[in-house]
Amino acid sequence: MPQMKKSIIQKGLLIFGGTLGALLIVLIIHIYSATHQPKNHLDQVQLSRIDFSEKPDSLEAMRISRFVRGLQGVQSTYFNIPDGVFVYTYSIKDQSSTQVFDQLMASGPYKAHRFMVDPETAKTGCPIIDDQDSFRSRIVTLISKL
Image (tube, rainbow, N blue to C red; front, side, top):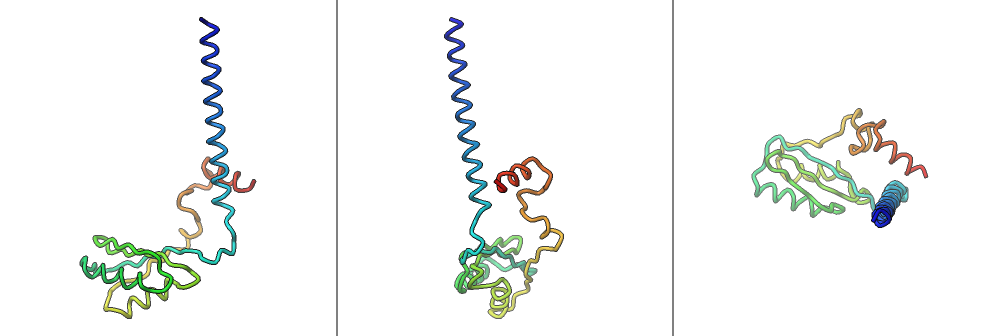
């Protein structure tokens, strides 16, 4: 009986170790592929935001979304009506946030402004890794340098 228990424990540890090793390999591959993208990718996508001081109703929000989505290079839009926040993605080779904002303001009498990240927040980089000394930050940095 003790021999059988020992065999079961050894198999369990082997399966657990193999699973843990496979997950570690997948994590390393994921971090490597996410941090080693081509630098001159031609179709990079940017996310921008416009804040409306006068919140439009749902019909006007639909019109705004449809207008911006129709602009060249704009890929998707989302309007958070209760907060008056409009978010859109666009290709940086076809469009800029300034051009989108200017065209939207020319299309109607909207009271809005572009959301701009303050310089201190921009320096922090990725919002997911908020603490540069955290364990997660060190692991990502280590794997990305491999």
